[in-house]
Each structure stands twice: as structure tokens, then as C-alpha cells.
Image (cartoon, rainbow, N blue to C red):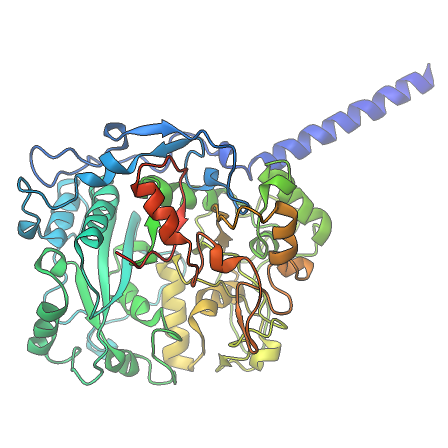
Length: 530
């Protein structure tokens, strides 16, 4: 009898542990997000009184019938993987037609009016005068106890150049993106163009007439009142202790100035003009942010450091997270700030490691769309490009993500701005936000959205190609194929990927989508041929 009771106790305790494990890891899954995608919306706005707006309920959807899904990531992290938003109804309404005179639309005014109708405070036209005046001319808010900005307000900043070709297909995409985010959200989102003027001699920061002339010459009327110009001269005067100011090395400096100048935004998505979304833009960005918010911090940096391949984990991100915990150990990962010499972390004080749900429900200061890897030992061409840190490149913990499209909190952008301006501390673009988030102990999350390779790359082969590094940084290690190394390109699957900085297949996927193919939510980059 005692043996029977003991056996029952063992079975019962095993079952209870199993249930607790399932309950704990359930929070990692996108299916655990409660309620509809994103936050409660304000009243959507219209461009014209008879406008068939971008409400997803008015668009046409279909069921994704193919059972072949991208080998990396999962569409569930950015939308419904089983439904596709058809391109014809979605994008056709933004094409140039006789009945719609898009030249009369002023998107900056449309967005600000939309926000004002939904009682957003401090909504005004901030484009008068020169938006990026030197910091000595106005008080800089360096508050870092919170993200700052109005809760729920998010800017989408699209980086572009002064010679960008605003072709009709590109204009149609811009209209769709603005309508699906700023207008659909009732002003919770606002879209900007951040235009890099190549001529560094133009005094954009001191000569308003020169600024207005350059604006007229570079941006069409339709988008002009949502555009902000800058050049290297502006960045040099803001950040004199940083040696490099070009877009390749300092992609975030203009965005840092933006965070100072537009304090009403708690978060800023920095996206590129050649990014395309096959899902509704608002739903995609909100879903990604909601899932990132739900992630607990335990071994988060270690999950961030590798690619999630669903077929190797039974299609379960919870199983993936459990596998990372088993490999790294519950006490082995980054917990709070990564320490380095002469650096004061400004993030929250971490609780005891026994608080395994720490960070769940916390809005991240950084959302990345690629894994964040430890660059040490990678032979990445910029591995040693660490400046102004007392411990140098070898002693400064670092992370980097290749493709600098992110959502950053105002707090993180101001911390980077302060470090560059006051201490001359800087890294190249791909490592800037990631490393500062790591050193300050701020929450950062990599969203494993779906990335497709060639059909002949199996999940096991993909794992061997992209997850070759050490446990804390599986997507890193020596010469990861997604990075450009000191000896040049590394053989791998990325040139035929649907998302990467130099992939050549993204336009193919986009044209298939435009042609009517039913595709799940995906991020496609770069799409340059329109």
C-alpha cells in the first residue's frame, strides 16, 4: 500500500510540475496575447468624406492554403499566419486615378488633424522653423526614469535620401502605410520622412531659407509637411565628440535629435523606404510590440541571440524557450545590466533571479527585427569599432543586429544621445541601440518574424547555417553568414532570403503578393525596383 501511495505521489507531483512548466512557458507564445491585436483604437480618420478607409474589416482576406511556411520565425508573431490580406483591394485605392487628386493631399496636416480630433494633447505643427536647432538653443530633457512621451503614441520614421525617386508605386505604398497606421489608429501613430541631404555644406541648422529651398527641391508637395531634413553638418555640430556621422556608421544620430525635438512620442519605429509589409501595417507593428511586451526577461538576451526555427521545436516557441533555458541554465543568462568599466547603468535594478516572470508585461526599450548577437569573436568588419568606452572593444559587452530597423523608446535614444554628446561613446549603427540597451539593463526583444530561404534549405540545414555560435549567441560565433566579415562575404542562405540587408529575393515575394498570391504576414526587405 505504501509503495502504491508513493507511486501516486510521484505521478501527481510529476503531473503538477508538468502543468506548472506548461503554464510558465505558455506566456511566451503569441497565442497567449489576450484580446484583439494591439491597443484600443481611437476613431479612425478619413482622407475624403467618402473614403473607404484602411479598416481591416473593409479589406479582402483569404485563407492561406499552402502548408509550406518560411523556415525561420513565424507569422504568428506579427499577425494571423492562416489569413492573407489581398493586395488588390488593399493597395489599389492608393493608386493615382481621375477621381482622386493626391497632389492636393498634405499628409502632415492630415495626420495632425486626425490626432487633434482624437484629443491628443500638444498636437501642433512642429515643422515651422528649423526642427534640429543646436541643443544649446533649448532645454534638453534627459529624464530616463521612464520611456517618456505620451503613453501609446508612436512615431514611424522612414529614412531616405534627398535624391529618392518618388515613383507612383512608391507613393502608393507610402499612402497605404500612413493610412494603415496614423489614420487607422486615430493619431496614435504618426509617420515622418527623415531625409538625409548629401550636400554637407548647406546650413540646414541655421538658414531657414536654405532649409526650405532644399525641402522644396527634394520632397514632393504631397509629403513635404511630414518631412525633416538633415545633413552631416547638423550631426557634426550636435555630436562633436563622435568622429563619424555618415549614415552607414551613425544611422541613429538624426533619430536621437528627433527624440529630443518630438517629446510626445514614447516610441519610435525606424523603418526603411524599401521595406514592404504583406499584412496590415498597424496590425503588424502592434502585434510585434504586444508580443515583445509579454516576454519575461529570464534568458531573454540568450533567446534574442539565436534564430527560432519552428519545425525544430514542434512549432512551439515555448518549447524553444525551454530549450534555451535548459542549455543556458536558469541562472546563466544576462540578468540586469552587463557590467563594464566606468559605465553607470540607468535601467531598473533587477530583482532576485527567483522572480522568473520579471519583465513580463514590461514595454521594451528596444524591439529588433533580427537576432542581437555578441559581436566578440565574430570577425565582423566592425567588431573592434568601439569608441569612448574605458574597457575598449575587448572589455565592453556588445550586441548587434544586422538591418537597423527597430522600435526604440525615447529613453534609450536620449541615453545614447547623452553618451555620444557628453562622453564621445559610440559604436556603428547595427550595434548602437543593442549595446546601450545591454549596458543599461533595459529590456530588448528580437521578434522572430518569418524569413524565407530557398525551398531546398531544410530546417536542419538552416539551423546549421545560422545558429553556429556559442549558447549565449547562437546566431553569432565566428564569421556568421548574415554579417560581412573581415575577409568578405560568408557563404550562407541570406542572398536568397525574404528579409536581410542585401537579399535579392524580397522583390520577387513582393511582386507575387501584388500579383494576387495569398501570402501570410511577412516583412520584405529590400524592395528597391519600384
